[in-house]
Length: 312
Image 1 (spheres, helix red, strand yellow):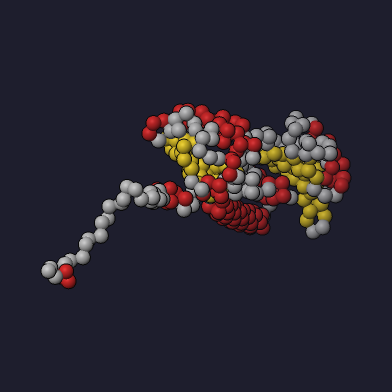
Image 2 (cartoon, one colour; image 1 turned 180 degrees about the vertical axis):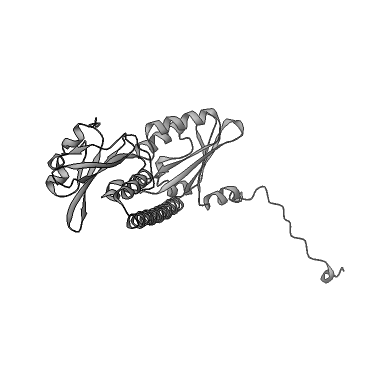
């Protein structure tokens, strides 16, 4: 009799019995991966039919089950997006043209809830397309805030630079006026004073022409004392021939404003559309003369911030 105790156990067969019930196929790994991705994905065939999509597409684009599926036509899908206000008719037509050109392209679409989804289309083999949809709402908002912050910083720098430049020019104005005052204080005669005024006015306000008039001893007329950028000062003028003298304060003629020419200007071939000012010269509380300054029509930028205020 054979001793069966030492007989090795029969090996278990790993072959599947053909008569047994078929086993369930393992899930598609690629589809599993696509379904857990943050992006929505659609694959279009060469003739514009949906051949594959992941489940994430419904969340990213806020779609219902019937909005996209295997067999959905691309044109129908694009028209739905247009109807939802994700883009306009021109953008839909442009997308169709790009699909037909079989070249990669991308654009942003505005989802009804206000989110921004970046659409990136890449051609695949056989004439089809693989399109991914990525929620870029926060990225776009962050970029917008960053761009706004950069603009605000640039504007602040521009304002600071402008203030600095104005301050430098004010300092230069003060320096020029200080030099003029120093020279005037050093004058021994009226002739010297008039010479200094003539020289300084040509340098201080180069885009102007004008004259200085002083009262005669009889106080019934003003005599021309000196001028710059014009042949000569007006010989004489009546005190009431200037609106500044009549009104007792500086007068500015503005062509576009409610103002009128002075009598002493009418006889000087004045350009009716040129601005001028008349400034009473006061010494020890008494008016001793008049300064007339006319600004050139085509004057360019100069060092004085406000020539009219500076002259006054």
